[in-house]
Image (cartoon, rainbow, N blue to C red; front, side, top):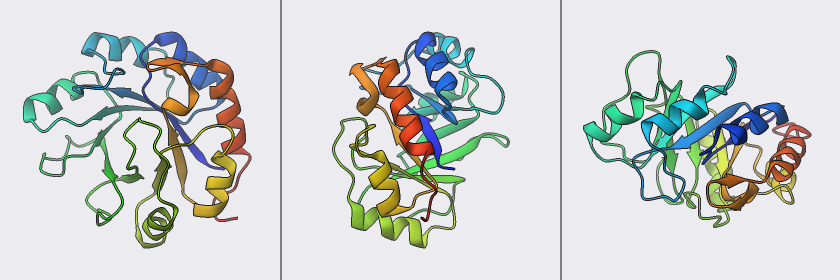
Length: 195
């Protein structure tokens, strides 16, 4: 069954809705210019709604040690970074690397997200995504332009380990549409990667 990450969560009620819908991971943006960016306190309130077994992920484009330290203070299970020069997180915290089309697929991480969109809804590059899935020794999540209407087709075409969505399930930036979250998870979970 396809792994599903619902990203850009800013409100505890949205985290609860995503968990109830069957999401495998909840993403909170920190240290970012994004309209979805949360403070440490906001992130902790969101993560307080996430039960054991569902991955708590801090997503950041920070380029500083101070920013990474702030992200880690929210007590995530994983950090998702697009800047490769930062040191890895402490033992016990998973590292997720973001790659965009044209970039080599990293191996110095626990998971890879293929995403040239960064929450803007720009559609993924299917050829690059397929190459990344085929070449990576790490689980690969697909992101970019996904929504309930096209996620099943994207999974069939690319065969990723999982999918990641932010803007595709929102009523406005930072506010999730709970019916779209449910529809997205149902559509994604109905697919078997590689089939």
